[in-house]
Each structure stands twice: as structure tokens, then as C-alpha cells.
Image (cartoon, rainbow, N blue to C red; front, side):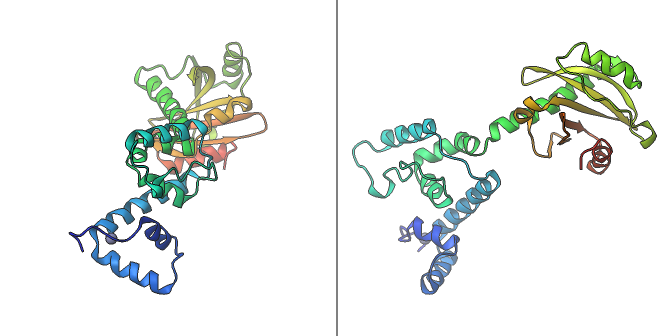
Length: 264
Ligand SMILES: [Zn+2]
């Protein structure tokens, strides 16, 4: 069977993976999967896709993306419309996982997937990644160029007015020296083209930047807790601001700091 063209449909395989096949068909597919390399590869691809979708959460298919997929499909087979692949997504229903599996079966869709377009648009990952990279890069750039602080002071009454004079808002500034995270000062960074207050704290030889972002801009900079290029990022918020801490300090001590600063 490894050499013969596989007779199992991908819909059947998708149903099997979703535990939707009745007993006998399920047993047949399970047996088939032990023998058919083609289906094993397909199964692995579907599982990988499903995991990414599960991580991405629900998201509507945008009209722009639908148009691109349809255009790509039209280019793929202009003369021989394949009924099984005739735009299963064209009725803009919810983007379910079997639907995406069907989508992934198309060469055109695979090309789009490879480009990262579909995944990015499904999850907002592009935006989140961009925010994450900006946050980490701002910290790393300042550290590498020895410009961590533009106002070097452990006095909150010095740092806060310095920042407020240069920003359209006045961030909360606290010192945590007694708890082992001394305030070293502050600086102005640009995140997604807007200036933000950056507070700098020390922990042994490590530095922590805390970006203080007004809540009306918080959504554009919302990133889940992450690690990128060896830097941890954790965010939290209070009634006035969103906070994003990044550092090369170990995660455990960063979490201690975040709890101290009002996160959880
Ligand atoms: Zn097969």
C-alpha cells in the first residue's frame, strides 16, 4: 500500500482524528494508518495544524484572505474545477479545523500557509510577534549601547517628573530596593512608533526594563508571557497602566519582581 495511490479520503482521516468515525471505520483507519506512509504524513501535518489552530484560538477568515485563496485556487486549476476542492471555505462560516484541513490539502493554500499569512491572520500572531520583538529589542538595544537610563536615579521623585515632562502621561514609579530590585532610573523608548516610559531595575548583574503604557494603547502592545532570544517578557496591568517587563534575568526571579510590582 505504500507504493499504491492511497484510497483513503482526507475527510475520513480528519474525521478519524476528531474521533468522529464509528467503530468499524475507526478500526479500519487505525489499521490503515499503521501501513500507509502517505496517510501517516498527512496525519502528522493535520495534527501539527490542529495544534497551531488550538493555540491561535478562533478567528474569522477575513474577506481579503478569502479573495487571495480563491485567486490562488483559480490560478491552480483554471480548466478542471475539482468538486472536492471547490472553495470549501467560500461560505464564510466559522474557520473550523476540518475546514482548514481541507484548505491545507490545496497546493495554493499550502503556499499561503508556508508564507505564514494564514497563520498570522488567523491568530493575530504577526501583531503580537511585532510587539514582542519591539519590547525585547528596545531593552536589548539600550543594554548593548549602554543607554539603559537617561535619568539615572533611585529617587522616584526625580524619575517620575523627568518622564512626565517628556510624555503625554505621568507613569507610576516605585523603588523596590529593600526587596532586592533597586530602581536605577528611567528612559524614553519608542514602541510601535509611540513614546513610552521605561523604568529600569537592577538584580545583581541583570537589568529589567518595565515599559509603562497607557491603557488606551495597551491592546496594541498586548503580548502573552513569552521568551524571545533569551529575554523573558511578562505583562500585567492596573487601573491606570499596562506594564511590560523584560529581562535576561531568570524567569523565577522575574516573577518575584512582577508580583512585587503588582502583577501576578
Ligand atoms: Zn493512506
